[in-house]
Structure formats: structure tokens, C-alpha cells
Image (cartoon, rainbow, N blue to C red):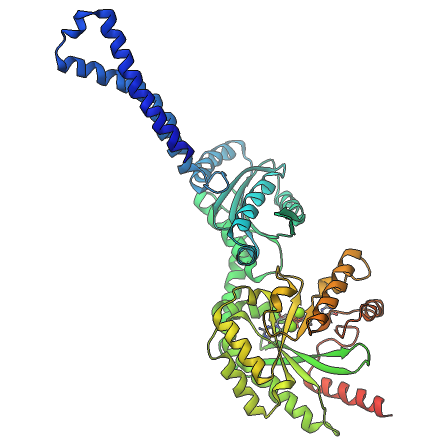
Length: 501
Ligand code: C2E
Ligand code: MG
Ligand code: MG
């Protein structure tokens, strides 16, 4: 706006300038000029116009146009085009000096969630701040924004691959410092992929695509950064192989559910258990869900797997109930749902099907969802959750505290259990801040009519601290790791016998 106002004003000044100069020339040359033919006067006008017009054109049109072509509008950072031109040039220099050239591709974790929770304006400020923070590392030469929540950077003065790792670690640590935006404190984390010239990439295209490929690999990994290596191609193939093997895994009965007890802190009794999936891979052995659930989510196989988990967990609970000498009244089973399951319209029908097949009371199953799944606030999610609540199925918010939602937001959904993430529990006797946050969550959640379960309790001191905070239930290695169904049944029987003895 400001620029176009300047341009209009300058254009008027320019025309006025031409007119005044022409008058001046006519006055000083007197009649001689006035006797010139209109064609010649026109030619003088055009010459004057173009002499004066060029700087005008340059300052108000060409320069902004050039700037826009090479910069990102929101952050003012250079864009991919500029980076590409710079890299073409820097590769030549690096080749001559026999130096390493490192390109970084960074992606903000959960940026969509941040945007959905706090709004686009807030998200824009996050992007600007991240751009600035990235540039604050001494080894970062250029920071660019590729678009969305994706940034790039070129590193300088790094002598070895080990050095690259150290720089990336430094960037990640710096990024962990909370940002203060519009009166809020927010913690952001990044996924960073990097590629190094000349070892793994020899051209601009290769550097960029391999850095991005490394960042993409992190989508199914817990590491914060990854440097592209030839092994990555093997890992990629490995993942494809796993995805391929997973296809028939349900039918071949290779999936197994383990169960981890959840204990009432006041009575010490097992009140429910969480069903946790494992994959008995014929060649690789027992695989944890972290190795294959992210793959299944990407490929869509999670829908079939999720349906199997629902049925299996319900049937198992029913089987325990009939096997137990005195029955197991009241012990519930908690089942993890993935986002994709929640977004399909027939999800509730699948739950009803599992209940019917097993003959279980709906009150005995709990479905675990995460804050992130609620953030989209889709009608379909609202609708499904209401229907499940009407049925009597309990909803649990898993890993609470790791997302950006608040209890006030969660309250809009029919959630009856809040599971506080292990990252809080492990710090309860270490970090006073985390302890206070837990105290507040427990108090608020209970006021809102929810019960609170703490995840990942590993020692007695944590349990004592939780009891002091009036937390309702606990789950963790202190009581038992996730175990096979037979072992879980034995554990239950032993506990009930101890009670009656
Ligand atoms: P989650 O739902 O948060 O499950 C709790 C995880 O914490 C489990 O890991 C459990 O073994 C682990 N854990 C429990 N107590 C402790 C403790 O005291 N210390 C430590 N260090 N860890 C503890 P697991 O079984 O590897 O599962 C990981 C994640 O995989 C689960 O996190 C859940 O998000 C996902 N998952 C597991 N089963 C399923 C499933 O059937 N469907 C879906 N969609 N996801 C699943
Ligand atoms: Mg869970
Ligand atoms: Mg959890």
C-alpha cells in the first residue's frame, strides 16, 4: 500500500518535473525551441522522460519486483530461488577450496496444531521468530523459508560430519527455549534434515532434495535431526519392506496385544489395563509399536490394524471375565485410537461391532485419543465422540500436556479421563515447575469431573508425590511393564487372592 502511494506520488512529480524542465529549456532557448516542429518537441519529451523515468522505474518497480522474486513475503527471509542461485555459486567455491558445504532442511513439529489452536496471526509470528532463531547459530550463514513451516539454511565453517551433528544439536537445543508470543509462552520443536557436499550430494538439486529426504525420514523417528547418508536409502527400503510385510500381518495373526495394569492409587487395586500392540515379525522378532504404527498410519493400514485391536481387546477382556474364578468385576480395557481411525465415519459402528461380538458392557471400554486429534475440531469427530459417550464408552485424553490444548478446550468434548504424560511424571520430584503444572492439571481436571491417570511411574517416590497431589490412578513400570494376556490374568488373580486372603 505504502509503496504504491509513493509510486503514484513520484509518478506525478516526474510528469511535473518533465513539464518544468521543458518550460525551462524553452525559456532559455526562447523562440528557437518554440519554433521546433511538434515531432521534435515530442522527441525531446521522450528523451527527457526516459532519462528521468529509469531511476524511477528501478526504485519503484524493478527493485521491489526483484526483492519479491528473491524473498519470502511473510518473514522477509531469502527464498528457495535465492538459495539455489547462492548454492550454485557456493558449490564452485567449496570445490575449489575443498571444503564441506552443508544444507539444512527444517520443519516445525505440529505447526498445524499451533495454527489451529492459536490462529494464523499467532502462527505467522512463530514463523518469523523461528526464522530469526535459526539465524542465531554462529555456523548458520543463510536462512531461507521454503514456504509453510519449512525453512532451509546453509552452514559455514564446519569441517566434518561430526561437526555438522554438533551444529544441528546446537540449533535444536536453542530452539527448545520457549518463545514468548502475545503473552503466551510456547515451546516449539524442529525436525532437521541435512545433506553435505561433496560426500552425499554433488549438485544444488541433490543437496536440497537429500536434506529434505532426511527431514522426511524423521516423520517416523523420534530423533530430532538426521544427516543424509547412503544408509538412509537402505532405511527407506527397510521401511518399505516393513510396510509390505505389515500388509498381511493381521491375517497371519502376527499382531499381539500386551496389557499394562492401571492402578487405583488409594486402594492399590488394578482397575483397568491399557492394550498395547506388538508385532511378532517372523524374521525381526517382537517389534514395538513405535517401529510400525507410524508406518501403518502413513499407509492407511492402521484402519485394519485398529479394528483388529478393538475386537481383540474386547474379546480378551470378556475371556478374562469368564476365566477368573470370581469374575473380574469392573476391570476395564483401554484402547489406543489413531487419528485416522477417528476421522472415518464408520468408527462408532466398528466399536459397536466389537462390543456386540464380545458381549461386553460399553462402560468397560475406554478409548484413548490425543489432544492433537481434537484440535481439528471436525464435525465428524464431535459427532463420533458424542455417540460413543451416549453408548457409555469412556473417552481418555492420552499423553496430556504434550500438545498445545488446555483442559478448558478438552472440556468441550465428552472426555472422562485425563492421562498425564510420562514427561511430567518423570520430573515430578526433579522440576518444581512440572510438579506445579501437574498439581494444577489434577485439580482442574477433577473439578471438571474427570479422573486423572499418571503415566510412566517408575519409582515409589513418584507414586508418593502423585498420591500427595491426589492423583486418581497410576500406570508404569513400578507396577508392571506391558505383559502378555496370560501373565496379566495371573497378575489379576494374584492380586484378588491377596485381597481375599
Ligand atoms: P501410549 O499410549 O502413551 O502408551 C504408553 C507407553 O508408555 C507404552 O509404550 C508403555 O510401554 C510405555 N510405558 C508405560 N509405563 C512406562 C514406564 O514406567 N516407563 C517407560 N519408560 N515407559 C512406560 P509402547 O507399548 O511402546 O507404546 C508406545 C505407543 O504406541 C503408545 O503410547 C501408543 O501411542 C502407541 N500404541 C500402542 N498400541 C497401540 C494401538 O493398539 N493402536 C495405536 N493406534 N497406537 C498404539
Ligand atoms: Mg495410550
Ligand atoms: Mg500415553
